[in-house]
Length: 272
Image (cartoon, rainbow, N blue to C red; front, side, top):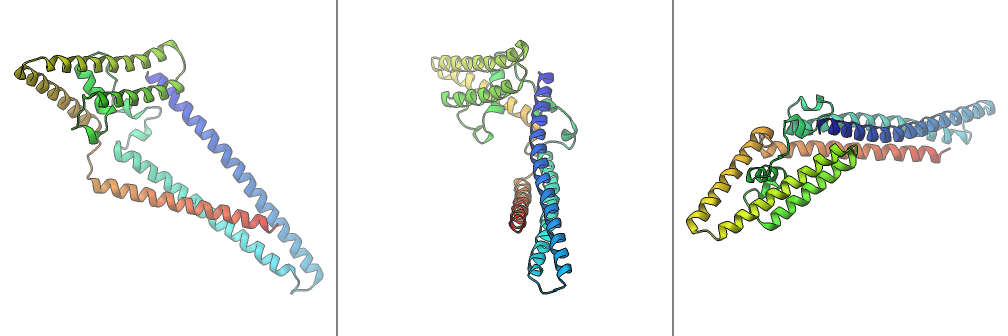
């Protein structure tokens, strides 16, 4: 599973990088061509003005406009490129906020792999609660975790995850079998929980309460294991908000700079 996931991560990164690279190559090619056209046009206008000997000829305004457009291209391009670098640093800050600073250097490893998490392979009540820590929103951890609705939502979440993994993995029998086993283990564990609740409904109040207390212990143990492994809430919420604000401000500034650069390109093109 680790090898297959590493292949998937590399394939995804290569695909995304290739798409971005091609887009950037095309944009840089167009911008270089535009700059060359502007420079050629300026040279022609200056030559024509020099030959005419008339400093106040009609070419003066055209030259001034092209030079201004040329400068605007330089300024907006530099700003957009600089903010892209800042945005990359901010993205690393976002990742490091929920992972230690070595995670980004762990090439080919997913977040779950890096923290040593393995999906349960044994059908049990304990496995159900381990699955639940990853499939149930933390805001609902104190809710009706074992309800039919909650189990249905968790099964859907897991199936979406597995389907996404299946699309990116090599379709070997081993890969498919591992993914299918994850779903089967959780589904069977859900059935085990449902059977337990149905039996508890037929028990005496004392026995039913004992079963509920045991489930609460299993759930508390699963939550404690999750917290110990991932430590996602080690910072106060105010730091979360500050990080989000910093990233959002940088993203908005980069977006504005890119739009200004595109506008500068369009303006320069209209002058040719």
